[in-house]
Length: 259
Image 1 (cartoon, rainbow, N blue to C red):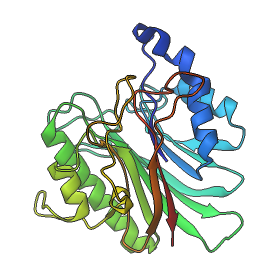
Image 2 (cartoon, one colour; image 1 turned 45 degrees about the vertical axis):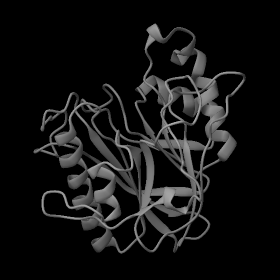
Image 3 (cartoon, rainbow, N blue to C red; image 1 turned 45 degrees about the horizontal axis):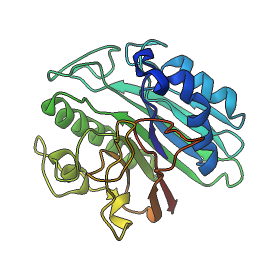
Image 4 (tube, one colour; image 1 turned 30 degrees about the vertical axis):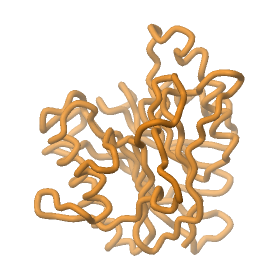
């Protein structure tokens, strides 16, 4: 699952986190994913979800470094998975420097990753990358995704394991960022070659950001990508309400994967 939680802004009124925390947790619990790539969660928000979902733990740091500001935390079912290794880098010219900003990005942007192993099938391992690209700067989105692709590919070649990439890319399907990930467009002299989980759907997926208004008109900006050997069995966008209200201004995207 990938799920932008919508950061806690009291000015959101009835849609502020205090009214949505249990709804967001219920949405995750409804699907019971092994891993959830989240975006915009503050520490207290992630801890609220963890308190509601006893089976889930998480990894990640704040985008300002340490526990400060928004996270791209990865939640995982700790009954099913163990974390063998994890890390985070910043989408900047100094990716290992916390709080670093480049390419006219409006905020520091990060990519959190974890190397997971199944507790029930110890031979079954995978790597999960999760990110949130800048909402203002196209150069930041393009340089950021190229950096992610480079690090993902290095991991993939070194570990020889399936890799999942989730996130809010702030980019619609025709954008160079998404075309780059699909292998249809080159950025900075490189091209990725990942599976877009939406390509499995027979219909236009519609929007994933809805600003608490609902509906499906538009195009997605939240995605799940995988390395080529991963088979996408099913993908859905859950547009349902929880107790009469939306748990976020983004719909979660959920995929069933096989390798």
